[in-house]
Length: 434
Image (cartoon, rainbow, N blue to C red; front, side):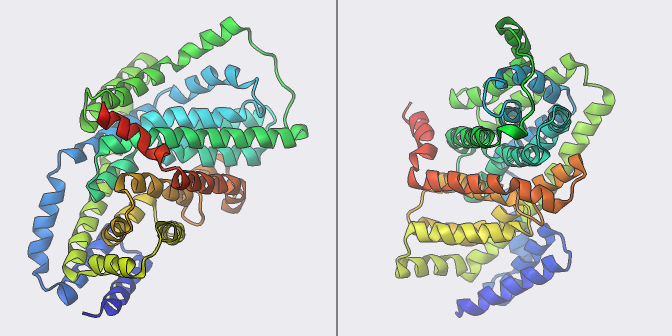
């Protein structure tokens, strides 16, 4: 069988469907059906029915709508305002001062949200007006928010990790644990860059305001207790082996409802809005998941993934060269597709090749999420760029230019976990050995 013809045919079909404005899920289904009918040698309809049932009847997938709902509930509370007021006094002593609120605020909200766009929107609606009113340069405020917002994909619980875990058959709990150290590393890199920028641009920063006494800082820090408690409940229960990812998601929803209730944000209207938002987002993701699952089955019938793996083995491509090629490929896709679509579109074809190169699929999941984070701030379809554009009213080009240094920092983080894979693997190995 000529695999070159298969590849060209399927890629052409995909580009025609996506370019024609067909939904991503329907495009994936369409390409799968074309592959099955022309090259698969199996009944397309029967495979579609069995594949959809097998991939939708999954207990693991129930974590997805629960974590999405948790983020929707928290988005409608005063959590972002409380986090700003709780963090700001502690940031004043650092070079760059309140700019770090973007980074640490996004890091905290990412640990209870799971969504990059939700993280950037929630923190940005409070931090950007505050930073502007205090005289901080808009470009660095926008750039730091765009970059730090991507922490929503990497710091668990991450919706993207659930999607990858289901697609690649990798433990979601282990993915969550594997994302902790890389998430903290990326947070430190962003904060370190802001310190360096502040040291080189002292004249652009406003005069330092009055510092609060230590006891007042502690009083303000009490505002962080709800989000820290929720992080400990969700991630701590997984790391301690008390709960699975799905059970931890249920705990997170209950905790988010309690936070909303105590803050006075839990009304009938906000409850229904959060529920409908979660349903809408979950249905969209599930539809894409089913389309990708069928495409995966179609690919296996054509033999294309196995052929690609055999080709890589024959060519003896080094893992580094393969990762470089995949990184460029993912960034190119990120110019046109969202992160979930990128992962589900490519998993069927590339995972056998990745395994053939001897790359750990757990580690590769974190690497892919880092690369997808780059796509979140890559025009023209960078979702974080759209969020910040809506918050500031600035044009997309200005937001993209402000975000570019943080794109390079994401590249640096990807290089570091490639050179030092234990950054990703240390905690999962420790959890397995415990």
